[in-house]
Length: 79
Image (cartoon, rainbow, N blue to C red; front, side):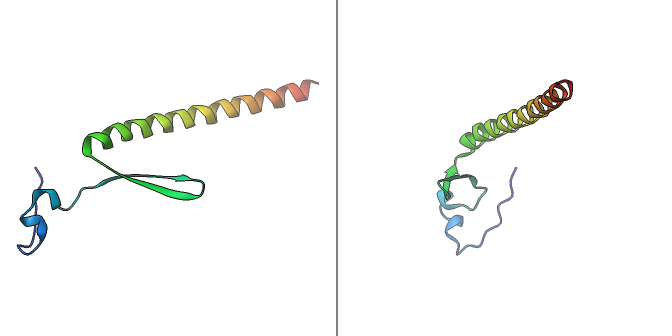
């Protein structure tokens, strides 16, 4: 349960659509420019899961790179 503290003069006290946060955002770079998207809570869950999968992929690629580097160094020593 979230506790909403608000001032009566604030628009969020009268209109549920104008309540403050939490806001979910997704930003990324395209050609050096930041692209920004505000996400709904269901979208935020999907993007969060996608980001977790991306981090797993990056970790696996780092491991593969290390294995490849060691294999190349081994082959170079045996040549």
